Length: 413
Image 1 (cartoon, rainbow, N blue to C red):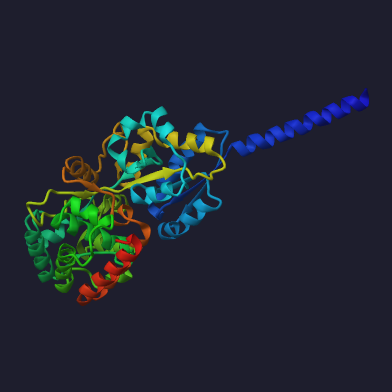
Image 2 (cartoon, helix red, strand yellow):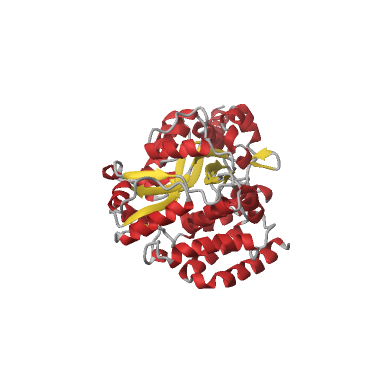
């Protein structure tokens, strides 16, 4: 009897140990997020709230720099991914969904009421009729500018037309002020310029055709975009040595009054010191052709669950937590972005308010962003070409010829 009792006790202990191990495994959740230094505190605050609300889950968060993240995510998803990843909507999300690398979250959208709460960004979260992401914040793009430098150069107000913009650049330069800062080392900041020049000159429908590979880069309409850009470069309206600056290093030029304007997403407002708030303004990219409806960039940041995630139940608990209106609003506020959830509080930051009003009133179309609206390979080549063009604008036609060869190879059109 003693032997049988001991045998039974050992069996119970083994079962308990196995059960505890299983519970521990089920309670583990690995999350990787792309974050600049200034964004981490906002992420961390919400992760801490999740931990408090879900003490049974062992949450492990890894922060990765933005450029490294873009390079590594394909490998993660294809091999041994974490349970949740931050990413972007549009073509970037669809690229992985099409390859079966993302978990279908359509049931979560239905269960959590997201079809209504995220109605405005549902389309960019959808591939082949299914939803694969949880939208977080999104950005409006426009010009941050120093009101005091405008006044110093004799500029009375914000430019509404392209000619007014060019006149203001001329006045700033004459006053010894660099008109425009751009972080050209981060090629996506040049892509913002291409997007807006194309949207203002050719319109949203043409822009989307170009993003889909349906338009030749040697098309005169594409050349017109680069020609307008070339005028700004030739007239030296951009800062010197722009290709040596990334987003983090270019910000101080605006903050310290060494440059007057910068085309950037509203997220940039979260990085501005309080001392600059009174002198900093923000305006919409000016009208170039009044006959072209005004379209905007409004890229959406998201969370996705990899198809190969090991702890999908816990992953779904995390995205449901992040999908709450108050959490969505808190993230957007901390990042200087706009909340995707239509039940979240509207932003109170003056710059974010302008961005929110701009996007909410846009009827000409909302693009995701150059490298989020087209296939990754074409986007990468396109942004390399932008840096080459920026460094030597005289190569405009050669750059477009090379891009056209690349388009034919990638899209076979």
